[in-house]
Image (cartoon, rainbow, N blue to C red; front, side, top):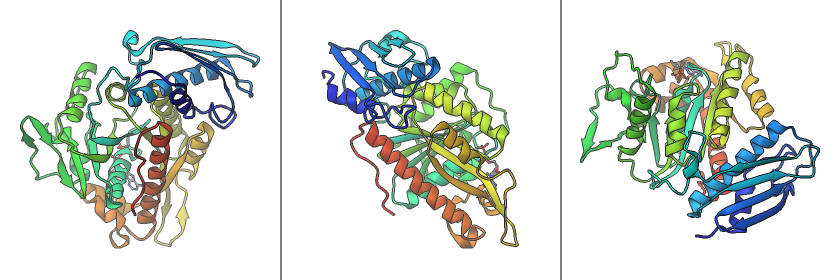
Length: 385
Ligand code: ADP
């Protein structure tokens, strides 16, 4: 299909500007020229922006156009982006995906077939650090979405330290393989798959880059997912090989970052956010885990400095998706493999945990719908609860 100005303009509405809006509503788009498959775009920002910001906006613009084109079936050649008008002028040129080769190339380009055509939204859950509760958030998001009526899959992409077998209580269940495809476990209303059931539990999992790539890809593409509204991917912590493979292989609606309130966790979370942005994966928002503790006296204690991750989200201009308190029941239900208990006040140590999880699911859903609309996906996901 031929490129259209309308489609490109639509893609540009997904790129934020330092002025607080997006490239289109802020009137930053000065000209747009289409020559065959090649594009030339001129932008002008009213706020003075440094070279680094302009470079970032140019990369985001390139990514947004190519992702949108992948969905509409358009082919995009070279994209030239120039900034005019402000104190600093800047120009960047991006070759077509096929010429780029490297990992910073165009994830999800039209040249790659979508390996998960039955899945509406693929969402990664990442964290800068281990132990901040990334898997806990991934599991509870998945279960919460399923409870709200969505068809949900959960993939344990933390191939170095899979925790889903424990957290979902997969202990006695056997991995079923049907006609060469992995059959996901259906537990707590969620279809789940994990490498943890295919390897020995107490053996260290050491993967070199290409092996990690292969293991992750096989889990994704060799699982019989069927039709899903959401596929949640629990990523390994940090900025290693798996997120790269994921962004190259899949069309993601976005990523969620889990962070605890302390400064040391925030610094690593910022790196994770930057990684997703570099990979042209939209960051849907930040979850603050272990936000505060409710004592037996009913008082709330800010052990790690409540609000730290929320402030970080604000600083980065990202949505804040919600705060989860430190809660003994959450840990115990995780160890017992029964996350459903986190949604019932009688097994969740009171109302605070179920309320925070339900709110998280609601805010998350709203951000997914927004991102899908911005990215021009056909069917927005609406909450049924
Ligand atoms: P990560 O995936 O980031 O390494 P996990 O989700 O595996 O972290 O969590 C690490 C441990 O902390 C688990 O035992 C989990 O049950 C516990 N945990 C996570 N979040 C909370 C919380 N809000 N309250 C109590 N325990 C928690």
